[in-house]
Amino acid sequence: MKKLMVLTLTIILIVGAFPALAQDDLEFDIEVLVDGLNNPRRFVVTDDGSIYITDPGLGGDIEAEGAFGPAFFGETGQIVVYSNGEVNPILESLPSAELSPTEYVGPSALYLGESGLWFLLGEGNRDAVDGSMVLAFWDMESEAATVVADFFAAEEELNPDGANIQTNPNDLDVTPDGTVMIADAGCNCIWSWTEADGLAVAHVWEDNPVPTSIDVTDEGDYYIGFLSGFPFAEGSARVEHYSADGELLDTLEGLTTVTDILWAEGVLYIVEFAMFGDQGWTPETGRLLAVGEEEYLVIAEGLNLPYHLEASPAGNFLVSVNTGYSEPGTGQIIEIKLAE
View 1 (cartoon, one colour):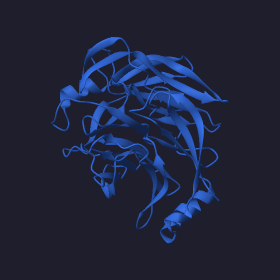
View 2 (cartoon, rainbow, N blue to C red; view 1 turned 90 degrees about the horizontal axis):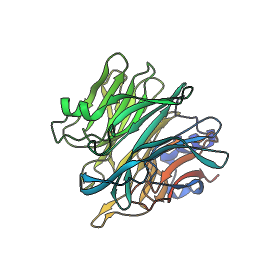
View 3 (cartoon, rainbow, N blue to C red; view 1 turned 180 degrees about the vertical axis):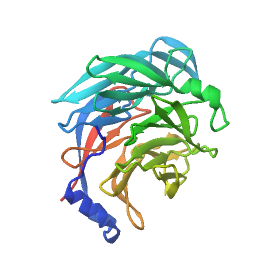
């Protein structure tokens, strides 16, 4: 199933015409659709409104050294589905890590295909939890999950950016020919995977831009969003646009901490995570933007640590919030509706 969905004509007309609009002309309402999640990152929406969500879990009892000090590992990660007002797990006992009292990592992204779910298991300690950085496929009919690619092993062998051995698969999408494309924020690279050829490096950057997101269009070209490296300076993030054969077509600059991008009906939407200051991430500074001919339009602002964006069957924006550095159980999927 293609993860992009058609936005309503009303929203497309507003966004498409926004260079002529004053910023104050846009107003929005927010409704909480799903609550009680743990640092949720990415999700997919089906035509009937069901939402498949990555829940990184709450770590576990295995103590080991993480990237920034002691961390706690376990198998509490999940993929859950929201349907008819209820949240139920469909995949449990996945690798999870508590990197700090409010930062949990584990399942990081997913893509719903015709026969099952592709999903990523992101940051984690390989020595503590085996297979914590992998691409896997869950078959809906057999309900069996199979690991198909090991990013840690590929990083050890290839080390694409020539820096520290680090991998953090963060987002994935699938091209029209079935190639799985993965944005890896750890190796500063984009991996491609096919059953015939396995993992290969599609793109790599040596300026530590931290690729966080990838979105493939129906024509096969794709957009890549970048968080930027520490200290995540305002305006230091970007989005790059590539042709289907990998040629760089365009670069959008002046962005801040990009965590997701969505191409829908000729409009590119961007999620900015937060501003970063002396005290770390500043609460309620996340934004949802649209790209116009001459400027970025702020569709919604004041969001608390937003991460992923999808379009709902009704044509509104669905965004995950409280997605990191947030207390357990405070994660949400919200629906943003532009006021008519």
